[in-house]
Length: 171
Image (cartoon, rainbow, N blue to C red; front, side):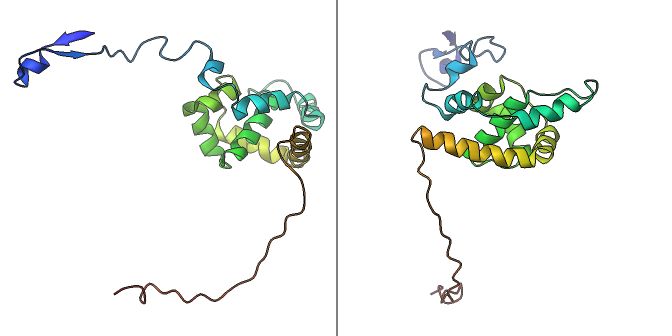
């Protein structure tokens, strides 16, 4: 604790005791990013799930590419990143990129890597058909784990005329 004369300047008889503040502190958070999240966090389930996914269609595209050129991220990491982003309601690649910088769960998921939004978008566009198949795989694995029950979902598109007006609500 650092004692300052702030209390005396404000008219109090005693010196104010303030905790030290050092933004350059090296270990503000736990040393391991895994310690940033609770044990039952969704990220850990998805990381375990990633080992069981069949990503052969995606890896086949990478084997055919010239190894020179742009820095590639591990496809399994990008797949799990997209899965987690969709689970938490972030479909935008720009918002996913921002979350990779600011959100502890995304940082744990990516191994503290921050893929650019264009890289995320290109990956999604390039592997759209393979990703559609992966979502079915994920649902089946979640069903086996007892997390979801798969059944029929029906949507009703009935339109009903409303009797609400912003002018009638005023008094």
